[in-house]
Image (cartoon, rainbow, N blue to C red; front, side):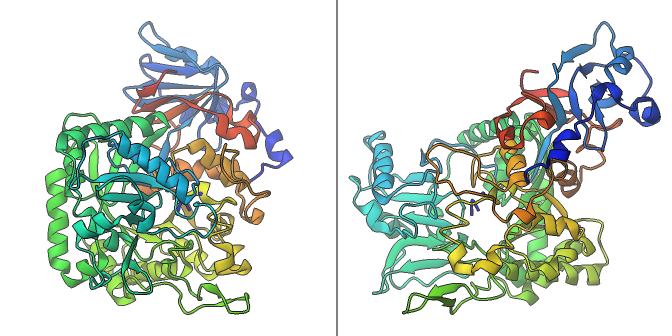
Length: 592
């Protein structure tokens, strides 16, 4: 599920002449009087996110005290003020991420999201094995960032034979970049105890050959967990150092606040360690892992355990506010096809014609169960975060939030539905009515092997034209927020902005290219794209009063880009680099 609009000529011409800013007209909101600022950033193209542009910003004790012109900021400069010359570059609110998987970056065998043949995949993994001589049959090799739908030729469905041909007796676990597919070898199946007689776990699939033998291909977390539960976790010291590396990486890419997903107790230990030492570089609103079916079976026990985890592991800058992502379905691309649809997937009949098939995708959680779980969590004050790829799962999630709203009459805490790849048009406006935020991955809205080879034939043109309906949802009043799903694909916020506007895949060496935008009518403006990745994600995270825009009274959570965002041709926006990242007025990454 890596699962990955053009600006009009008029929009490009609308770049504001900074020297003509109406600073005086908005003076009461633009400045706070007092002593000199600690930090002044001037001579820039300041993208405030509030509807006005500026040249300069002044900061005192981490808070913005002035937004306006270069002339107006002079009175905030004292002998001890740090003054940064932006040299015409953009200063904008920091990127916030409402759906990311911020796991420790541990040494692994990395396939780097490459589109590979079976032979190429095997060769890369063999190189990793050869780099670790002396390992034996009890030493796992973990392989990450495997791109299953991108395997060549299109439609390739690998099995344990790919791995069994390697020169090793080690168990091997290959984890897809989408998080919903995995592959293991015969040794891995043996260590996990998976045999012909092992039943499919609820919500997961052990793929089998015609004789019923496991092929090594596993779908969804419950089946994948049969293997990962046998892989020993890294020591806490390695997890802490790995998490440091992850957070340094995303901060350098411009993230200032985020919601890490699916945190379990072993993850919380590493986050708590860094939080207690004030080492977290961004604002964190963490989300705890939860299986909805297990929670339904014991709601009181589930709520007690969630309270225990919150009480035990919250720390400075590390708030545990959310439960999720709760999986209402899986992913939509072939060969997985575990997303829940309102109408069946298509299959080829014996005449080679595409016709409706036998399944809409599995129902992962019964509606009545999801209703009860969401309502109980909502009543207890938890924010609920649900994964929904298909239109059937999106409707089920909305139904569950509607049930909770009726029973709790609580719209203060926004619900979250992540991904929203396919949503029925009749459901667009329900997001606004129910105060549910769509946490979307804008970079997925492009023509690539996922949307073309692994999807279009299987859902048909009518549904395919409704994929990633960002503009339609905005017009219906829905609030969209950034949910990059990192590391489903590498983190690149500038590419996310570019694809949101163009719906065209950026040029990348070695990646298959498709001409034209994906569903051009769903392109959005650059202004909308910026808001989605900043202010509206701050709303999702509950940080809207503190961050998300550059306005007097708010914390300076901001990034400096390598150029002027508004003057950069939209199809070149991805070339802009994040030069510096500030959180609370403190430089956390880069050099201004």
